[in-house]
Length: 524
Image 1: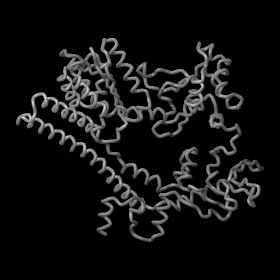
Image 2: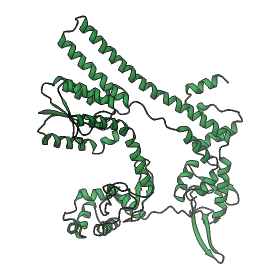
Image 3: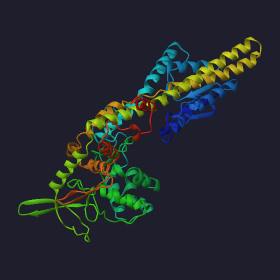
Image 4: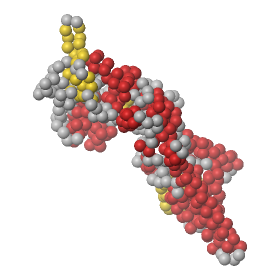
């Protein structure tokens, strides 16, 4: 028997992983077991997943056309699973009908129970229906579930070398505990990383260091340059006790035992960039959250903070550390400065009038953008209707004798393949509406009381928040308060709104005018 293989991923992100290779490998092994000679492999890489035209399934259409033109020699159309074949029940049976007409059998590698028996046909229908539902929620559930684990400080994948995998999923359990250290490998890799952070080993020498520490004795394999690359470039954050959320890029403190400190990780990254090892001059200190944000009013350099002990106990102060500055060493009480900062946040907080206008404008823009997506989907539907009309004309030309029987069958098959490929694309054309209004409500509540939000937010988040509000920092002088400063975009727009003394600001100042905004402007 001869056959083809069709592999598919639904997004460009998956192409970067191993999904396509995984599918092809399994399909080839299956074909070898069944004595199926693989003639060709068709790969749908998901590159055009953002496009809504019929070429969304270009490789799929090529596979159908190949089957049509070689139906005398092709016996099997092989896919890994039903859900790689089509996204819904209607599409599945439409394609199955075409293949059956060519005398070609569909084989699903991981669902061998599908055959021409009564129970096999029932199972096929069930799996095809499940695929329609499953593909709609799988990605969302998977990403949400994994993000939840990450936010809890748990690493939802197989941990890097040096840690043991609990295999919770394999045992039918949910992951509730962090991956424990491997008693033998953990100290070996930890020692190697700490030595590398001293700058006394090159990357190539680190493999020999691992072997001398006992890596080969524990694993039975020698440490190689590829292993060193994985340790230094792929797993370093995890070794420092940090889990990076791949969807939000947020860094979460993991519950697992770290091998190295955050400073050692930074030093290693510094070395990997080809720099000499040196101590970091400024480290984040949660006790002095306004460091780097509040500037010296004289020299413009960021203030630093320190504690001093006196007869009354411990005193915390901010001060300028630039020796040439006239304010060098002049202490500013921490409590006083941070109290003034909270009051300033209250002064620049947008009022309800501005926030309501801002929300309305953003919703206008979102509505306009959403219309463009809807128009794209409508264009796909128009293309589908065009193919159906084309099929109708082909049949009419057969009836009036313009086509011979052979010409009719050839042309009919071409158009039917175009129809099914476009229908499959249409199944993927609709996007879920993001609840932007709820997000804006939350944002407005957050912005409306920034002083309280700054006090309550985690210390590690404060520098990023301060950077958003005061992107270039803010000067401060003892007994005189804050000087002139720049504001982040939304706060700068609010400042213009307040100073304009008008009842309504043109929303086109925020975004190019949408049709709904233009309509509203024309009726004022």
